[in-house]
Length: 278
Image (cartoon, rainbow, N blue to C red; front, side, top):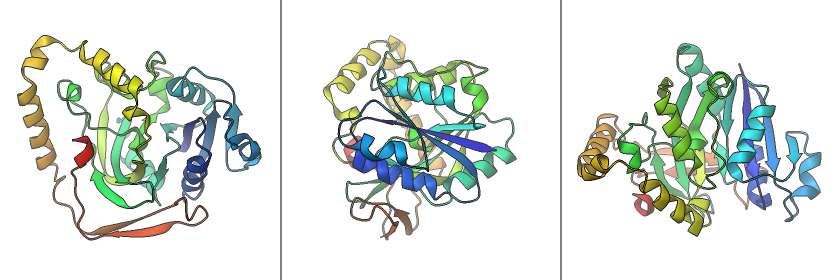
């Protein structure tokens, strides 16, 4: 089982280096790491084409989701995933995902958990995944794509790619397409990834806010009227799944201060609440 990890890149040189390192040190799996860089002018091109750990493609694209589609079309792996520049895989992540796919041959999409950190790598919270619910996702999106993995057939045979018309909310509309096509999904009870909440993430910018409003306008009125019901049900699902019963833990990641070696962070009081993104 070979993994193809695609990273869309634009003017994110310092974060991209950490992302690449976190993929390159995955043990016990076969993988390729495809970087789709949109002609960055921040120094990325000075080192990326010569990095032997990746397959680098430097070309203009129509945005992040177009870059991911391009990478998926070039991918040679059985399992596809995309990891943004400000995201990383935790040690052993892909080995755990490989085992889960092997034990569940009928599952086409695997969802795992993500640890949220700040720009220096310090802990913010744990973010578990839930299998998406058709009604809930309008109000609570239970997936971070940093911990989402698909079989190649989802992209090739089913033809479910990212809609590049969306520059920031492509994840939502892609997951909606997975639900519409009844693609078999399951949650792997592990944490595979880290997401850096550095205050500069695309989903905080004006275009993302505009696209959220545009997407909300597509919501059926009856779903909007029952919003309290869907949110309450979502919270019950999280409670039943044990999302709020976390034990002390630790994680190891690359940081801007330590780009060559993972740094371990101990978490004595983990939380499943992302206070800035409820």
